Image 1 (cartoon, rainbow, N blue to C red):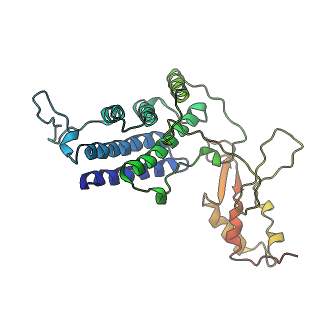
Image 2: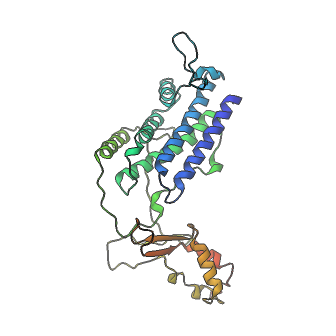
Length: 305
């Protein structure tokens, strides 16, 4: 890989890392729009790296020119370069960019361009944007590997599915406005037109969270049913059963200090408010079973009989 292409690839990866970091932050306002902006920036840099590599490392090949063949420049005097739409179109026409990737970027561009019309609410639109964003990251990782033989698996580039959080006890009904309904229809029609790809590129990635029986300590016990007679399993402080787990356990300062410290860590505790829009409303704490691993450091586990 040439020095110019390599620099652009490094910048592209950096932009995608920041985009994912912004998306994965809990309760982060404007995160969907932020991801779309930065992810498209990452893709444009990656496509420019591919364009330069295609043109024998000639940086000038991505400069816009007038009818006289002179390089167009902006007000600061820097050369104007081809944008995302131009690059996706021409690389696709040359057979270098999979049509699913182009469709994914076109849809994500629509999200960026009309972001001001979107409101982040629990709706079908939110789920579709999640699937669109996950496909964007997946395609990016595959393209970097295919085009520049660079492995990004060590960076753990992934978006956290929204369904990892426990569902709220009640959900306010949401009605999409005209612009949202039109865009959602556009997303669905494009997704249905997706063709199977042996290369692994996708327009959208379907998000499914499945519950399976597990004996692992970090497994999340849940009950999803309308049956009132089904046994309930809740993540509560009382059901951690420290008394049954440890031989020297006592509810004293040591216990309370550990619990209070971990309650501020989203990996161990999730606080659900009765009214999600009101941070001072009544709340309930849900504990991840892996919190016991921290208590194991302070207390002696009972010997199994």
